[in-house]
Image (cartoon, rainbow, N blue to C red; front, top):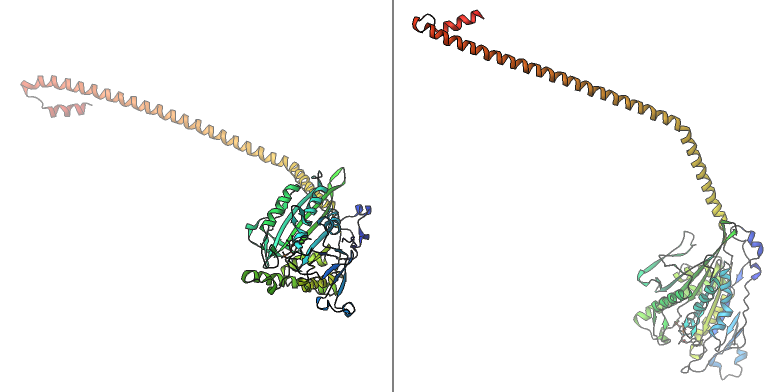
Amino acid sequence: MIGNSNNNNNNNNTPTSSDSDTSRKIPKTADERLMVAVRIRPLKSDEPQRCLYAINKKDVFLEDDSDRNNALRQKRGSDKQYSFDVVFSEDSTQEDVYDVTTSSLVKDVLNGYNATVFAYGATGAGKTHTMVGDPSQPGIMVRALNDLFNAVKDKEDEYSVTMSYLELYNEQIRDLLNPASGYLELREDSRGRNIQVAGLSEISTTSTNEVMLLLQKGNKARTVEPTAMNKTSSRSHALLSVTVRHSIPIDKKDHLRMRVKQGRLFMIDLAGSERANKTKNRGKRLQEGAHINRSLLALGNCINALSGGARYVNYRDSKLTRLLKEALSGNCRTVMIAHVSPASNQKDESRNTLTYADRAKNISSKAERNVLDVSYHVSQYQTVINELRDEINRLQQKMTEDRPRSAEINKITAEQRSNEVKKLREQIVETFKMQMKLRRKLMEIDSHLLGLGMEAERQHLIISHWESRNNKLYKGSGLKSRAQTQQTMRYSN
Ligand SMILES: Nc1ncnc2c1ncn2[C@@H]1O[C@H](COP(=O)(O)OP(=O)(O)OP(=O)(O)O)[C@@H](O)[C@H]1O
């Protein structure tokens, strides 16, 4: 049995054409109640009788086995009826669940709202079946991505889509699209807002095929182990996030002024709460179970506090609650799909889930449309550009004013330089002339020396001649010695 969506979300604040005049964010919206859906999975062949029924599209009935034979059991009040926004019976299809719970969220996201759909419930109750499914029965994640991509198809210039996929395993965050990156840190500002996972891959794509491959890759990387309750039990919480950004020019002629709508869709497949004695988990599995239960307990406490209207809600007890903070109380439209098994041996788990889901009905959040008038920012850039232009103009003007002076300086410098060159040239010429003079004098001295040498030679010859004549003359008479002759010559000179 499938119930109609009776989402009490306040849609009065759906944006109207008047929003187009809005710069920055649109005004705050009224509170919206969290939509709570319940899905009952089919009874398995090896499971005992059922204890849980969908009475109609909104109500579910939990029967107390212990009073089965008691004719007054209905009056004793141990059986319990719960009412929700919508109840999906055992024969509900994946399409039914998607259409009623999530297809409207996809439209919201395209319109600039944040939205979250999360699956809650005990181990083996059908959460992964609803959220992920299999190729023959694709779940919410696949259908939502398909619808998103169909909506933005052929409009790549207007839309940008990015996705990230993480798992929270034993209170550690792992990137399912890049498992090799190790454990990632959860960061938030000092006021506990703006929670972000540092280093998480945000893959940008507008191809449906590519995104499906990424999703498959992420699901394969997820920690899944067999337990006594579920052959393919998810041992981690998985969070898929898709961000859609729509940018259009405010004025078709002016592409600097853009209006940007940004919506984000979180799709979360929580790990299931479990009882150690039922799952028969030991060692590592038991430790995983303890972590899962602790984070779900923290989530339960937040749901309790929020539904009771508490002023202070402690999100800090677990990374799961820190990650879900926005979805539970912030700017987000949220749908919780509580999963229950109809089997009587799962009655306690189903009752717990229904109790939490019942409380969650009272939670409200404030969804605002995230419309940013980028023209505001662009106009800031425009101001900066104008200021820079002014500065350039001022500098150009200064340069123009300074040009004659600098020309003067240049002129002086050129004159000085040519004078110096002239001086140098004159000096070189002078030096050259001097050199020539000196060389000439040197040549004169040389020729004078040569003349003297020749004269000396001539004198030697005369003397030699004279000596030889004298020697012949005085040889026989013995009148003057050679020394006497030289003395005589000296006086005669
Ligand atoms: N609505 C459904 N229709 C058909 N089969 C279902 C449905 N819901 C669950 N199942 C089957 O029940 C089994 C357990 O479901 P699933 O793995 O989705 O549970 P779970 O809540 O995610 O468990 P865990 O928390 O341990 O991961 C699976 O074999 C799944 O195919």
